[in-house]
Image (tube, rainbow, N blue to C red):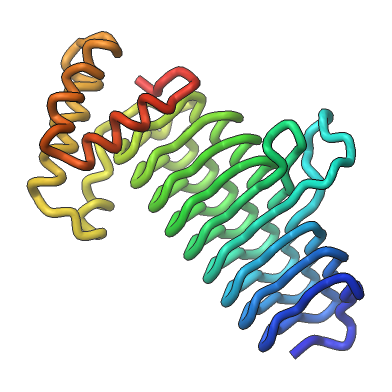
Length: 257
């Protein structure tokens, strides 16, 4: 299951039932979990930990050094979970010492062709990154987020769970959970990701509570402190609104409004 032209460093650890295609290069201090399939001409550099049952297509570049002038050669890592799909020409960089030292990708994510995940990013589970989308350094992406084609997220931004970033949208501020960002030169909120929530089993009452929270935050003409206060009242009856409020409390950048 390992092609004879593949180059595997003696310091790499390859789990059982791993397939590695022609002319792929696996560097030192790379761990690849059971059942992972790696296509032809893939380069994986360490330190990198890859879980089980991942699918990595040809020409992907995984675990390369961070594209950050402040990186001084210190040991940093890339950690990838299980059952991820990583398509052609995807690039994922390791972390930096100043950024915590780790770039991480969770489980069950789809990274389609030409996606870029920069240093010190943390991606959750069940996300979809469409073709040519990109994250700058230090970005946090919550579970079930969809990033559409040609979209980009500025460094240090956070995108909350179940948010939807529209095609070509440039995100320069934190995006709360459930919010849908429009396709504009500078992304703006345009409602909640109600269709995605329905597909994931959110019932009418949950979606209605999220809509009320969105109207409070974006349509009631309130200042951010005033909106936070009202969201606190709504959060008493909705775990989803509470998740939005907790996201606002963690936000360190400006909020997309």
